[in-house]
Length: 219
Image (cartoon, rainbow, N blue to C red):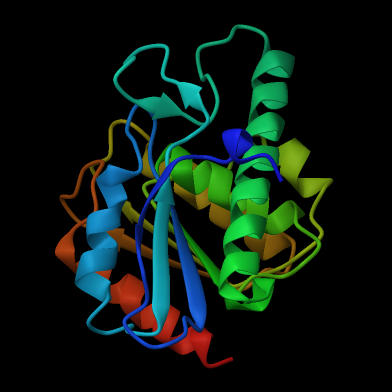
């Protein structure tokens, strides 16, 4: 495997002798892996046998060259956006496969945690991957291109979507549409709406996310 093709990441090793689970954080548009790895620092005391990693998305952000994007949201051509999304999925898949092999874990021990565009990529990855992962935690996100996902669903992991009702970047309606699609396809989805919360992760969101992971790691 060519390391030059592997996404660069910030990571926190397991505190136990052997990691039993892997959490991959997927950051938002224009950010980088350092943005979410702090959640791993907070959760580690409760999840000592977890390995946390937060890769940079594969593309330099067109709007913020200091950060990264999973795919360009500004293309007028939807086909071009979809191709970039699918390329990003392939690179994320390569990164995850490498990490699972390194830790000697299978996909049932993998959780994805996304924020904003990172939620979009996490949902697309988890639903279209044949191997079922342990779960997806999605903050302030949505499903990008419902038609594309719906005709390519291969797996149905448990999903928890959390969103602020005052989010002006990704409106709450987008999360509700994602929930409707998941319910329609008989996928185990749970949602939480935070009153007065914008495009961010409140502290209660971290506690509820931790609870979701603890429930599904034992299944």
